[in-house]
Amino acid sequence: MRLTKIVFALAVILSLMQTQGCKHEPVIVLTAADSAICFERDILPIFVTNCAKSGCHDAVTAEEELILNSWQGIMAGGIKPGDPGDSEIFEEIQGSMGGPKYGNLSRDQKILIQKWIMLGAKNTTNCTTDCDSSQFKFSANIKPLIDKYCIGCHAYPNASGSVELSSHSGIAFVAKNGTLLSSLTHPTNWMPKGGNRLSDCQIKQFEKWINAGAPND
Image (tube, rainbow, N blue to C red; front, side, top):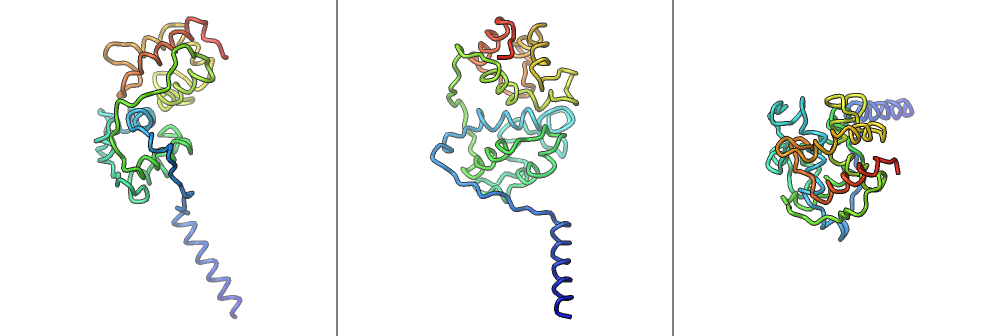
């Protein structure tokens, strides 16, 4: 009889775990280097390219009345400075907002947002970058910029405007026909849509890579 009760209790616990889901997240320890996390440079691009896009949380669609292309809009989504666990938008990121519809946020991106909240979710702007326009290798310089600013909207198989930037071939195609550089330098509706224009240094990296023939180097 006692064994039966134990088995029953275990079954109840397992059932609750399956119903509620396991919400335990890895413990994140802040380091001195994390104090350099910048909202405008590091956090905002994640939201702009993965969340503030057509059909989701851009200015036109404003799903759930949220526009996630600014610090104010992101904070309105339920950010509690210093407490990621009590920040509604972070819980969404860990769940549905981390799914395919929102660009499949990587583990590193989620951790970066978590650390930013832990540090007070500050609206830091005009932060320095380590951009070097003399460096324009595809793997080391161009692809990381594409992943940061573009891939959320232009990933296979649901690439916006049928512009697929998940592979070198797709990126090289729009680079060689002029679309890529034009979209980055347009005087008004530049890419990333709804985000800040890339820096002059970053645009120069794209320009030099394209002029070199857009190699897969």
